[in-house]
Picture 1: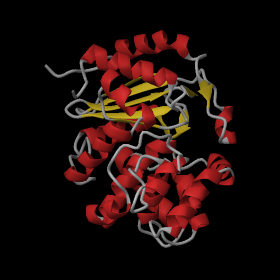
Picture 2: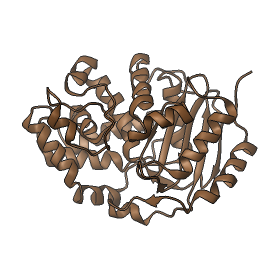
Picture 3: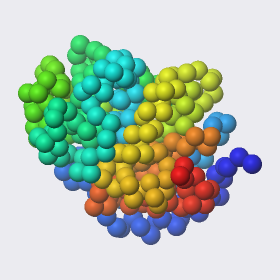
Length: 310
């Protein structure tokens, strides 16, 4: 029998995790994110038959932040091919914080270990086709519109500006990689593209649908059209398993065991083959940078429905 989540289940889970909203800390190193209300929590599950259930603040929007790394990787792979992308970015977990520069200095050749850390994500965004930041962001947004089946999705200009103005570490990573010929072109234009990419704004059900397309091996849920080539969708999900939850990815794989990617806004997107897409949101983060409420929701969901891929 197919595993499905009912409305009653998500209502119950949201009520249960409301006790955890006071734990953790809302991200403050991006000033505009610090304004988020830690009580704004939500869950959405998009089944592969097209049925979607959600609970909590389902209409509220939030920025996807590092979840965009998965989407940019899929687009860059479609634009450039596997050989080109992985000649510049590795495939291995780092074990270091997502903004660390240490491995760039000690790895030879000096390329990022994977596309889910900031250095790797910057290199990947640099590979997206387009001659200007607006063109690249426009192509990424068009891709997101396809995945979510919603052309209203845009990016939050205030958060993009806030991230751009405070992107000191990312500038450092980008300049280091330019020195070593991992990335090309203007660093400021790259940062402009990257911060707008991270500031793409969705609600919980839109994010769950994006996750469902990856769960459906790159095919649109309703039409069955292949949006992402099957092999590339699988590559993205593999990175979600090995590197998607920052340097808590190993413990998350044991506790929850689903391909997932988190962002410092407090969002997490999951994709489970033969099941669907999962999105959770709670702005307060644990010490690894993952949503406290989101981790609780995903653990309950995985346990209740036995969704671990292991």
